[in-house]
Length: 329
Image (cartoon, rainbow, N blue to C red):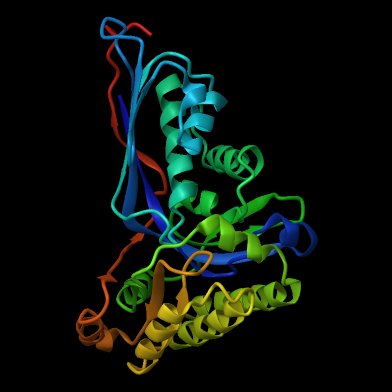
């Protein structure tokens, strides 16, 4: 049996520049981090003395003997990719619900590919895992979206991602001190907007707006310099400007409910904020002064759910690898 966990991510700067329609002409630059909230995958081959039926559990339960009939598209295409025909027990569960702007679908896909590779004894390489998930989501399933989420899930950490015009990507840890990382973690938190959204519909709207994306990429490069200088207040200001640019992409990104939350947060004198993911719902990232964080969270929790976080640096990883040689498969 293989049990793995994959971290959710917060995309801080450069979001939507990672769409192929943009980076293939202009390149992409993103900054973000993975956090200590996870999607878990467990998989094993079922003993043939039990039966030949696979048991697949996520938000629903499927029992079937043909993996081509699996309803969940990520599970179905992951099993097909690695030619898994024997019966399996496969379970998915998560710390956070889907459709909340934290890269859950890509984390799920990376976790599936990682666990299956481990089960089969295949090479597990972070670059290859990201490519596995990108191919499944963007090419095979033709889901609209970028490619940074799959990279975050594979690599983990507080990083920059540069994507060249040919699709080659480079992941580099931000050159900051441990003291700054602790300060950053003590200055950021997430606020739930109380709404979930249809990611694919909103993500499709990000395919246009080249001029806005150029501005977002420029802001990501400015944010990189502020991270290198370890200036939280500058990072917050650039995040605020990034949010203003993001809202211009589509009217569906900032709903009346999100505008209400935005006004509420601005009244609390925060340093910066932006909606995570494609928009329309999910979590808002907030940066504040470290000294004000606890007081601010207490005030916000009277109206909204708040999620505190730590940066996770490992990316996808195993938490159990157990092989039963008596199982015939």
